[in-house]
View 1 (cartoon, rainbow, N blue to C red):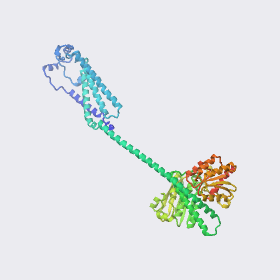
View 2: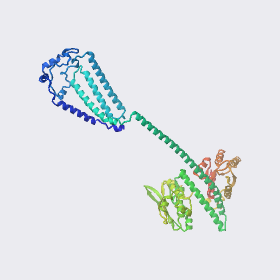
View 3: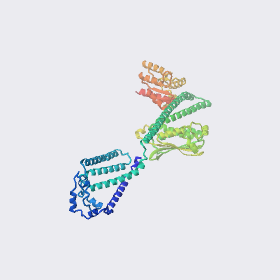
View 4: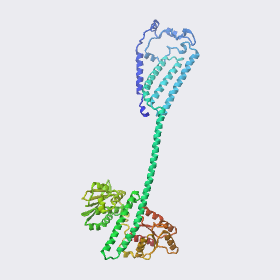
Length: 639
């Protein structure tokens, strides 16, 4: 409102001032329009202003308090010639034609000084008022109608000057100058009055103090209510956040427990199936049954791993590496895994990798292999005849070099509606697809999110019902130097050629090694003890952390320590975390390998922090188990 009222400028005031001044000048320049009232005044106009007799009569004036002239002010003196206001203005400070006010009339000293002192005091007061107003306006720039304040101050100043002039002419009869001051005062008065008339209607729209108090009180109440509503909303959001965090923790705990409960029996199922498959079976049905157990067990394990991966991605707990990787080898290995399935279904699997792809680049080889594997597995699942083609090349996307992998199949394809759902969790094409082909619908969801975590994209390039699908993976690449290239990952880290060839080769790896096996599951005790003893190890079995600590410290005190401990982490009486910490405090320096059905990222970190040297998640293949054990035993021997 204040800003709106600052448009009051001096332009209308100046226009009014000029108009008033022009009117007065025109009036002053007009010849006198009133005739002489008597013969004396007519005769006076004939007397020249410089007539010595006139000046002589002006000098003979009565003094203050004198009764000469009957108390009149020089009325017997001959009249002056009639002159225009312009002529009078040229004589502005000429006082020869007027006596001081003391000389005009019968002034007593007390009456004269009463007028003089009163006019001076009024002048001082009139000067104080505008000074105060100007100081106030300059300090309160938010006050509206600044121009009116200055104009009103000017009006008061001119009024004060007229009073000062009234006191001055008792000694200095500058009546002409006093007239000019009165003209200026009149002009300023008219302009101020006109401005007030124009401003008052607008000023009346301002709220009164009472109205302002009510308005402020209302606004304060509304702000208080809004603030209280915000506080309640924040509390609700905080509670909702706590509920969400609790739900997330509950989900994570459920997934961890589910993983543990599924992986524990799966360890025994897959482990014993592997042991049975090593035997020579002449009955084809027995071999087929064993292979069926292994195949379905691995499928169930894949489902569990997919659910855990999705949970890690959603909670932000999935770590991404940037290490040297060989993309050509990774893509070829992923295709090789499904060569057998394609042959069984009569599908042609074509692989075309451009030579322009660098031999080594920085990426996460595990996640890159997982994405390509999921894409090929998806193509194999939904293609009954025809071919599957995998193309890899280099491309430039927004001035960035990128690895482009296309997986094209001639399968059932997808409609636009199905394409909109395919990357959502548990979202396959439709219910009939799930019934016909099975699966959880997590593979493509995980692959897209992994691609995004790697800085790239995964999308459907083209798809139509009964015309196949074309998926495209784009990943920005980062080149690595020759030193890093020598460390490139070309094969899965869990595969070790020296232990994966034959169980007979594995029999020689742990000959004479003294190993403590700590596990509360009877089936897993039997499984791991068979695998270790078949590899030549001397195995001692305990079923909880307390027994493991007592047995290991007793062996340490007799100078016959265990060379390695396989420690289950979830056990009754004393868990593996506590047992490992106590063993480290008791100066046990041998390798402790965590062997647990918990497979979350945080579980591995927790095991390492507790003092374990390595971590193996259940179920584990014989090759992986023996590879980790032999590697750590070799490190101890080398020291």
